[in-house]
Amino acid sequence: MHPILIWSIMRKTYLIVLMAIMLSPFASCLSPLMAEDVVYLTTDQFRDRIFDYKTEKEWSFKGDKPCVIDFYTTWCGPCKRLAPIMEEMSQKYCDKVVFYKADTERERELAYVFGINSIPQVLYIPTEGKPMLLKGLYPKEEIEKIIDDFLLKTNK
Image 1 (cartoon, rainbow, N blue to C red):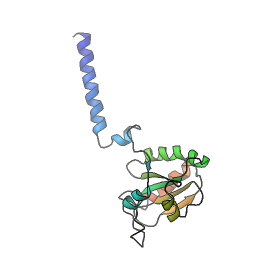
Image 2: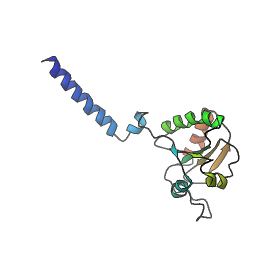
Image 3: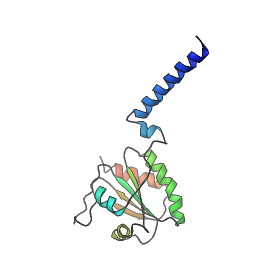
Image 4: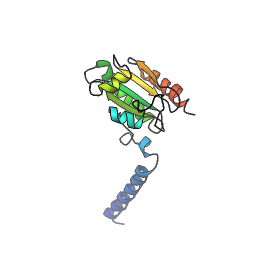
């Protein structure tokens, strides 16, 4: 066989295998480039996706997966150190937990509703039960423990 023909066949086979992997249901967790990223959350999106505090009196989570909301600002040093940890967690837990970021300077109403008076603060919301709001920068291992023990264990 001619080398160009062999190369052409190998290239087609490679592309078919690559497309099969990318289209598989597990592709988002296999490839870091395709994994879910942290989603920037507005006040209106919060009310649509998570909880409408204007119409509801009792906490009632709207989502089907637990979520984490990182309340931050762009100038905050600890917030900047937390950001890559949250990105890493969003990829690690891509099929189990949704990760959001809410800029407290842009989303003042949302920050006011949760009494955000210092940053960073992270809101952990299980699918059932009340959310938990923690102040400050926690180590990655502690964040993983909170996700595993509070969000995913209560989700079973």
